[in-house]
Amino acid sequence: MDALRDVLGSPPVPEGSWQREAVYVSPAALRRAGGTGRAAVRGPGTAPVREAAEDLAARVRAVPGVRTVHVRPNGFLVIEVAEPGEIVREILTEPAGPPEGAVSGSAVSGSAVSPGRMESVWPDAPRTWRNPGFVVRYAYVRAGWVQGWARDLGMGAEWGCRTGPPGPPEEGVGVLGEGAGVPGEGVGLPEEGAGVPGEDRGFRPELLGGPYDRAVLRLLAELPSRRAGRDPGWPAYLERLAEAYHDAFEHAPAIPKGDEPPSAAHAARLRMARAVRKVLAEGLTALGQTPPDKI
Image (cartoon, rainbow, N blue to C red; front, side):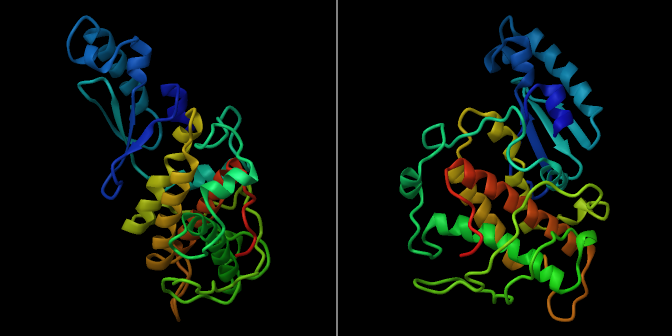
């Protein structure tokens, strides 16, 4: 993403579901030519916009990891990347928190949210699936639990595991109802930060190709362009990311089941869980809430 940002001048925006292909779009050519979408179709701005778009497309095609690039009639670039799972590596190797130059703040007011305002965004209760705030906080904690369970199975750093205390007893699959308890309540979790250099050597992003994995990757890919915007839209974004992660947690687990041996696919999902946890922590912090170490 850094290489694309360097060529385009700003992060491209993911488009579509990513179930079949991982596509970004960028209006960088319009900004460079000083034109508009309409000028790209007809009028005196057509040639400058098209020329700028074709020049940028040629440069983007040379970026490692880019599969195809084509130019739409309105001058937008459509960029398909070969391995959407690479967004996980990028997020994990960043320093903790937004990178230098990113816009911080919330979608509520454009600045940090006070604890009182935070309650108006997401109430603490009820702690059920009906409360989006609970869904987000539970996803953050759940993404940490899998690291502990993996360590209990002997999956160390080479599998993408974070160091820290063992996880809580493994929870059953199911939906929480009104007033239902949360497995592992009260168990502390290690904080997610920057990755350890070299620990992703065994990461195989191509194994994050299932529909539930792709849904999570599609949302993680929104992070750079959201950071670059004036209004990141944290609440709605975190809710969507949390819901996608819960689906992946249930249907594309990062932990082997029964006598199943750990695999490279499990290792890739462990890293994806860490990336989700890191992004959720960034958003919660931007909204004025401390990411929970228990729930």
